[in-house]
Structure formats: C-alpha cells, structure tokens
Image (cartoon, rainbow, N blue to C red; front, side):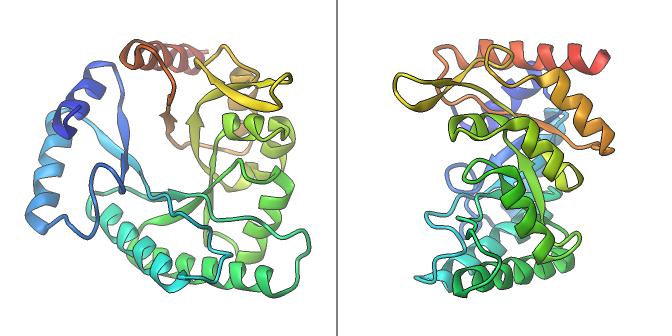
Length: 249
C-alpha cells in the first residue's frame, strides 16, 4: 500500500498515531527537507502523529563489525524522527551478555550511552525492543547505560515467542517502558517456537499488562503490529477497538 494511502487508512481505522519504518517506508538518507514537510502535511490531513520510527539494524550494537556504520545510520534515523516530531526510535539493541563485565558488555554500554547522549541533544530517544532476552537482563543493561539515556519498547509477543515471561519482564522493565507494542502470540510447544496471533487471542494478558504499566505511570502510545494476518485491515480495526475498550475500563 502506498505510504499516503497507508496513513489515510490508519486514520480511518481509528488510530491516533503511527509508527514509520525507516527501512521500508521513509529512508533517512533519501528524505529531503521538502519531503519532511510533505510527510507532516500527510499526517496532519489524516489527523495522526508519529509515535515512533522503527529502524531495524541487521546486527545489534554488541557486534564490533561495521559498528560505526550502524551507529551513524541509527543517528540519522534519530534526526529524521525528530524532524517528523516523533519522540522515539525503536530497534533491538543486541544480545545482552550474561555478565556485567567483559568486552562485549562494555562495548554495548558505551555505544548505547553515546546514542543516549545523541538522543538527548537531538530530541528522539532510542528504545530497546524486548524479545531477544528476558526482562531482568534488559533492565540490567538499561540501568547500566544510565537513567533516561534509553527506554524500552515493550513487545509482549516478542517475549512469548522467545519463551520469556511477560509478567517478569514488566516488573523489571516497567519504569523504563516508553512504548507498548500491541502484539500477541502463543507458544507452539510441538514446534518449540512462538506464533503470532490476533491481539487478545494469545498468551499476553493485556488487561493485566496495562494495569501493571499504569502502576509505573506509563502514558505512552500503543503501537499495533500484525505481521501474519490474512486480513490486516480488519484485524487492525479490531485491535484498535479492543485497546479502546480496555482503555475505557
């Protein structure tokens, strides 16, 4: 679906904000100042804001190979996010080492600290997406990087797919959560992997999750994501209605 049509469709489905993919929809190295103004106009016409910019790198920030290029590209995405008035850039930051020491740990903390400082100057904060490690491990990393330097994009489906506890993760990461990824999954025991399902039909207890986040004064956006739907528009509309019903209490 063309980008402009996707925005209009999101607005018509009841969405208040969207996430923009900086790999497939708007590329930081290609968009011009005129392009930014045009996108802002499209957003205004659809009565939408940008909740976040997604920028998925092929490797995490713990991998030294081509790290400078990854960091520079991430900073470009953060600049674009600010220009689009988006407060966050989302990525999986990489595997968190088991020990809070060693070369890989120090490299990861150093790079994320640099990106955190850049975000503070630029106005767009990097969020680490959950799923590649358990909640306490990611919380240990976020704490080591420093207060407020980076935040968390809480993806319950990613945790379920990887075999981690959503409840444990929200307890550990609650103070750092800035964005909720409204995505659901179940664990397929026969195949030993997670399977994405329609929001509200999986193992994630969203009423309890929203309640837990409220205890941490979470006021961020919920970004609906569905990767394997037969009828994406219908399921997204149902997800919007589901979240609105939960919010209404």
